[in-house]
Amino acid sequence: MRVLITGGSGKIGTRLIERLEKSNYQTVNFDVRPPKSGKYEFIEGSILDREAVQKATKNVDVVIHLAAYPMEEVIPSYPQGWDVNCTGTFNVFEYSVKNKVKKVIYASSICAVGFITWNTPNHSIIYFPVDEKHPCRPENIYGASKLLAEKLAYMYSRRSNTSFIGFRIATVWFDGPNGGPDEDTKTLIDDFVKDPANILNRSFPYPNVTVHALKDLSWQYVGVWDVAEAFKLAIENANTKFDIYNLGAEDSCSDWDSLKIAQYFYPGVSIRNPTIFLLDRKRTLWDISKAKRKLGFKPKFRWTEYVK
Image (tube, rainbow, N blue to C red; front, side, top):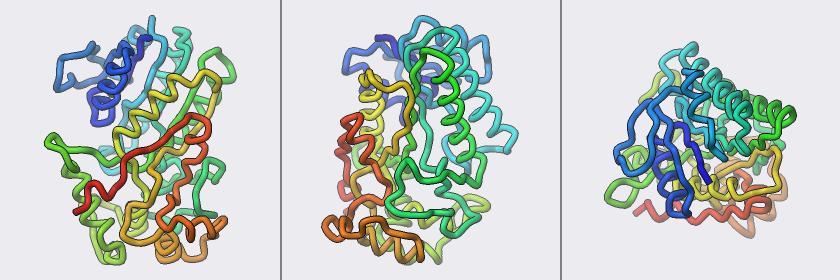
């Protein structure tokens, strides 16, 4: 099976290609940047170049769409954010359908729901744990772009024979070249995991980010290799025409229990079936039960592996 990965030179893409190649998939990396390793097939191109996207999506069975600005804080401007994350996604979906690709699997985000932002203290959260039925109310261009991708995917799934699966991915923790966490993940651990109470007194090295965004980083995460495995499972799922899945770890990444996090940072937000959090004190507040049930997703990584 031939699989095209947009953004395959990125931090998730490189791990995903390695995972798929080990399972005997033939991968093609489509990216504006060459990969560090020249081991696998690579096409240099931009998702904003419609002709390049049209050519790249020909004669492939599956398209995995990762290419995007990966977070709000690195988007140079909202017009640029729209061009890459929205128009670029449209191009990938449009030409995948025109070229009769069997399946498109794409990276949505926890931010599509409205997390990791700075305007609303509780992010309009109605209940915990947050499942796929929770209303989506993004407050920045990154989250809005991911929600738009979901709506585009639904439209194309209804008007074509192409299947679409989207993953609302929690904050990804990455491994470093020598094992253990990479530098960005070390920052997450030191600033948001070891002593959550101090989050309210900290600053963050990005403009316009307040404690409303910071507290979301104290309880949701997913290991990068679990993300790669989820995309592989989605390729192998033969029965889904369109669906969206939360993707995260089995637990909350904090010294605090999950109920304490919810009650401390999000007072007044309803807790559905609180008994489950008494039986499993670290149970995730980002509900992944649908992905576990329908895709067989079984995240293996635990945050304690990186915390000494």
